[in-house]
Amino acid sequence: MLVNRQSSRWGRHRRPAEPLSGMKPFDTHLYYILYMTCRFSEPAMARNAPRAAKKSITRRREEHPIDDRIGVNITMNQEVAMKSVKIRKIPAVAMGVTLASLLSFGVSSASADFPEKNLTYINPFNPGGEIDIVARLQQPLLEEYFDQGVTIDYRTGGGGAVGWSHLKDQPADGYTMAGFSLPHIVAQPIVRDPGYATDDLKLVYTFHSTPQVLVVSQDSPYETLDDFLAAAEESPGAVTVGGTGEATGNHLAAIRMMNAADIEVTWIPFPGTGPTIPALRGGHVGALMTNSTVAFQNQDSFRALAVAWDERLPFLEDVPTFQELGYDVVEAIYRGVLVPADTPDDVVATLAEGFDDVNHQIAQKQTDIGAFVHYWGPEESAELVERLKGEYAEILAEDE
Image: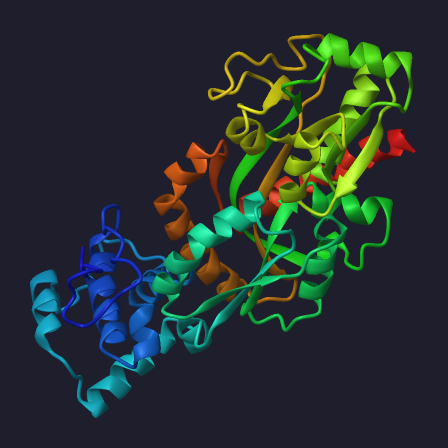
C-alpha cells in the first residue's frame, strides 16, 4: 500500500491506495506516476490521488488498448516512484507538465475536487429508525473519509415523501443526499402524488435490507399466525396492524399478507419506525408489520408470529416463515443513499466509494441489530429499482 491512513507524514487520508494486483506492467508504472502527481499537488487533488490515478488508467485502457508485448517503456519504475515520496513539493514548471499530462489522460479536475465543502445528509424518517441508526454510525466515518463535515437534516413525514420531495429540488451537485427506503420510493408515486417521481432520484449506494416480520405484544391473545388470521377473518377490519406510512415496505408486506390469506385488517400508518414500538407496547395497535431489526431488538416485549422471507432468519430461528405456514408472503426493505437525478456520474461514483468504505467498517454493527448488509453501488441499486417497479405496480393494482 502506498499510504497508511493513520501514520502518513503527509497528513490524514481517507483510505490507502488500492492494491495493484491484476494491473498490467505498463499500468502499474503509470499508476505510480499519476498517483505521485496527484498526491503532491494541491490538497483537493491529493485527497483523491488513488481514485484519480486508477480512473485515468481505466479510461486510458478503454480508449487506447495496449498490448504489453509492444516495447512500451516507462522510465520511472516502482522503486523510483516510492522514493519520490520524500519530495515535499514539485517545482512549478514540472507540476505544469505533469498536470497537463494527467489531464490528457482524462482525469476531471471537477471530480478530483469533490467534495470541497460540507455535505448534508437528509433523514426522511423520525429519529430512532433504521436509517437514523445507520446514518449516525456513518456520519463520523464519512467526515473522516471526505475530510468535510456531514450534517444530518431531519425532514420527516409522509413515509419519507417529505424528505425525498425536498431533495429533488436541491442542486444536483452531490452536496445534498438523503437516505432511502425501497419499496417506498417506487411504490409511493404509483399510488399517489408524493411530491416526487422515482425518476427524480438517483441511487448512490444500498447498504442493507431488513425482511419484514409480523409481531404482537407478549401479552397478546394471538399465540400463533393461525390465531391472528382467524381473528381477522372472523371480524374483517377489526384487527389493526401498524407500520411506517403507506405504500412502504411495512405496508406492502401487510398487503401481501391480506392477499395471501384472504383477510382484511385496518392499516395504521406511522411517520417512521420509532413511534411504532411504543404504540404496540401501549396497546394502540393489535400488531405491527415491522422490520427484522425491530423484531430482533424487542424480543423481550414482542412476540414474532411469522417472517416474510424465503428462509428463517438466523437471529429469529424459532420463528417460521409465512411460506412455511402456507402463505406466499416475502418482503424486505432495502436502505441506502440517493441524490437528485441530474447529479453527475463521477460525483455519484465518488460518494459511492465513500459509502462503500464506511459500510465495510460498520458491517458488523448492522448485522448486530438484525439487518442484512449489502455493498451495492449505483448500477446494482438501479437494477433493483427497475425490478421492483413492475412488481409493485402489480401488487398495488390488486389492492385497489
